[in-house]
Image (cartoon, rainbow, N blue to C red):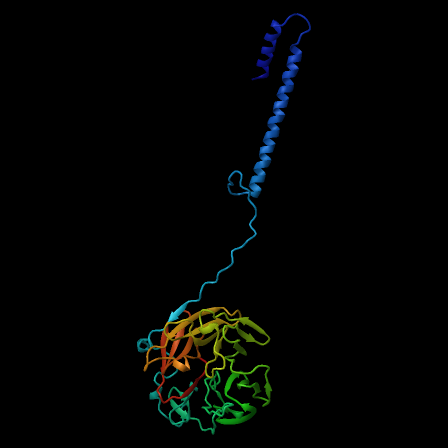
Length: 389
């Protein structure tokens, strides 16, 4: 209603009032005050609504049902790490159908001819049925003319001095553990040197210009430049082959497995992967192999209806298991693994692990999970050591 219309109404009302002091002015003042109060009420309501809308936008971007209090969430969902991929090898009888990769290593070792000399790098060391150790090259195998004795353990049991890590990563040196000594041979010039290391030495692991010499009762770090052997604070057969001074240590049945380097360690969680959730301890010829920031090692598989080995590849800095390979043993007489297991024997490049499967070397690509045949080993090969690839 406009002010003009309101004036007209008051004027009409005034004409009907009795004589005396006019009340039109009073009515007009009351009407004006009422309109003012209504305008302030509207302004107040609008301000309140605006404030509520602003608060609603600030604290609750999503619609909230009436009568439900909303509080900020302080809980977080724990990150669940997915299980690492597990590949499964075919039965032992199916390995022959695997592809053969192109590597410098001879495919069929039974066909490698014996020669007196041949050019080219040393690809492997191998002890054949005649008891001699040979330098394996692409053009043949050359006898190693060095007098060696057995590697004898504390019980007096002898064994071949050729160990899985006897050949240096670059193929130019070879080391052989002996009782109270280690014999190191320069394969380029054919010169041998005998280093005194007290005790029943059984395993050697290359550490650049040094050798980690393992015994059941002591470990020594042998400096090849000075000839000094420094006893370590640990003992036993836990070292890892490769370029870093790593160890894989399990505290026994159901215990914790760790990867150690220097004074630091990380947990290697193989529960549900390996037998008893740990790595084998004190097993000669079955140690881890490091390449870059990864390490590979085999163990008995966990909770398998049929016997099997499992190869585990883990990150050395975090202990995270990257990938696993299951190797069922199969049935006699052609069973793989068995009592000696299916040990890791090295790497080809950064992505392929070399695994011993009976009388065959397999290549396992940890990027794709694909398997291949690297080499065929005859029964006459009793021991061997591969160079780094």
